[in-house]
Image (cartoon, rainbow, N blue to C red; front, side, top):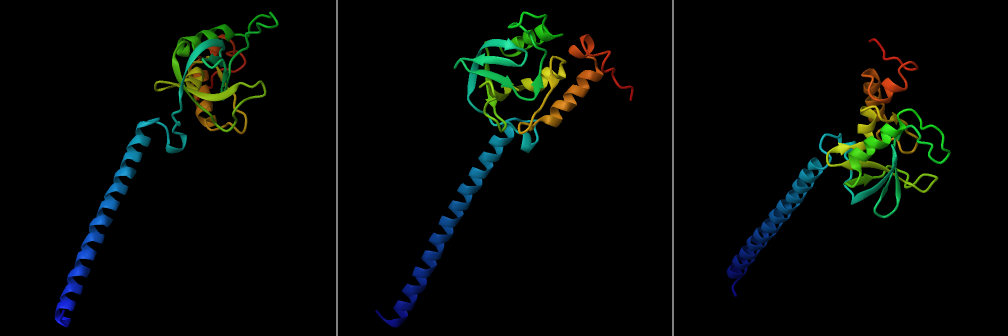
Length: 198
């Protein structure tokens, strides 16, 4: 092979290699962009309406088999679940005292919202409380049950570190319920916490 032929062969080989590398790189970039796009679409569709930092992580769903009171229920695994960030009046069934004001209504409302339904559970920081109950945010469809109970006046906002992800959301919901005298704010707390006249 002459030197001219060797030079021509070298040039052709170099061009061919550059072409192959370019095609491979383009394919790699396109595949990467597709994955990023799919991930973005998925993240937008999950928990739409929440800020990115608040977007719920969709976990396994569980069937609610028993309502214990306004802020505690049991799932099919027989584990008890305590809703994070809220507190409802006690039923006092173990002491046989008169139930707390609006305690029965709160239990009935939670039953209406989730009993015998598949709910999604999301944790904050803590796994369980001192009684061994799972600490969770609860979702049924698009409804954020913890927030709904406060907004409708069936529960009070009650957050404790380190589980404070939705503290501001819950306090805002409570202010709205109190200002509009919903539920327990009308029946139990009106005289103690009169609505502001801003």
